[in-house]
Image 1 (cartoon, rainbow, N blue to C red):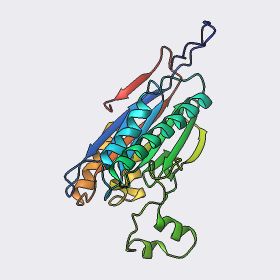
Image 2: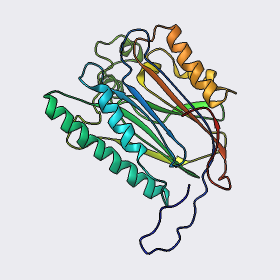
Image 3: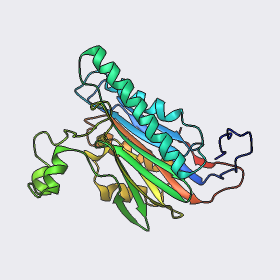
Length: 267
């Protein structure tokens, strides 16, 4: 990723971007009439995101669009820390914009968001709500995000078993979302990339119908776009009660000379 121009007029050292296989797919599902999910695939800036406008609240699509549009304005960064700072600032800007919309409409407006940042050899995940980020490495799947939901809180405290949670009323109620509070409430994890890592970002429209093991099986040996298509297709065959969106990113190694070298058809 090329650096930004410094204030002193000197030349910024160029950061060569990672080689990535990318994919993305989104569908309104079989029940809802409006797709309130939005996604971002921006390898030039190293940003990838899924946002899910909160169902049951007015202007969920407006909220998810505000977050994705804010992230899309981020220019290539000078360092991993610079990219993270820009991303946090954009989330704060979107949060304020959504708050203004909510005040004008006299109602609650919000969106979940899951963001993956790639600045090889580093990655970071930031999220709010129940849109998820998975990583598949060495044939194993790990959920890197942790759901901000009432049901997850009950599970964490041992109040419910996983079996009880699967039928608990209101199990999809989120406890954090962008636009709901004066300041955005987010969580962050970070780590180091390894060649072959596959990241899957998704709205809860996927995980309502597809288990983690099935995500792993459908992604095994598949290109990023093929994995996204297969996951959305399986969701549709199982009823797709909500909008469903999947973004997949495989780190092929690198950095590659000359900037971003991308494969796949995600956009």
